[in-house]
Image: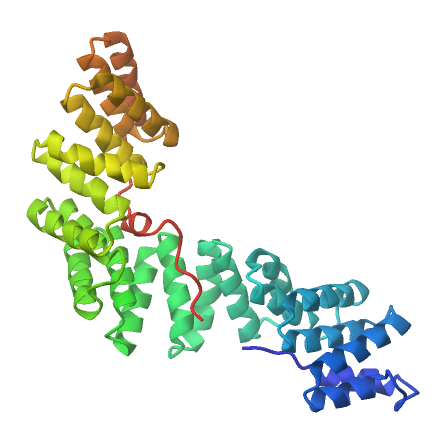
Length: 378
């Protein structure tokens, strides 16, 4: 999808240069480029820009050569100078956006790609790159809106449909995500990632049994995929299938012993089985591995309360509240431990907060399985 060449621009530039064959001329730079001597061509373009610092086309041509040499940071500087001199230079916004995009500077790439698309709303390349940049900047709803018309025009472009599907998933537009992942699976039924993402979308739509089926398909294809057995265990846990959930968390931990979430939810099962002493070491390890895993702190506080270790339980649950004061479960467990310790006033205060915050906890499998969205496909 790269568009480095500005033939019309260079030709018009050459026509304006009287000393066509002189050393350090545009003609020399173009000849060196054709010979594949990019470093030498860049030196010549630098000479041209030094002689004529108001020549936007020369800076743009320098940017093209630097981009071809994978020197995207220097290319971006050259393009920015060209833009400052002539923002209407053909192709400059798209090339500047590409230089920023290639450096992973997605936020910086958005404005030039948006300008390129505004100049030509039919430019599919600019639309796709803008959508990818919005995704990379974690502006998922905007990315989905931008990419959806582009995807309609390219039903066989799996990379495009992957990014659209993931944008929909992270924007919590799960119906869109479901449609896109099903399309991907029709073209590639053996994509474990597509089965996993489709499962996440289905779970968000309340179709947990269907989600379970997709995860089971993914296990058949890629049984050692990181976090896959955790996700399967989490779905079993949501369906109150504790034995199956325990098995899957165990498989995840046999493959990846440092999966803090698997340890935390395995500890939760032990608590549900009224086995707080067995839950305690699992939950301590989970909090040691990931100190900001709020749910592990909540379960640890509950285990300590059940074991009558009230002072430590209070400290742990206060940390859980500090991680997210808007979640009612930590306040509820803190209320329990205050009551068990005989501090009825503090207990009542926490229970009142629970009443104020009462809402269903967001058990979003997408967020459980990943702290950040997948990287853009290569």
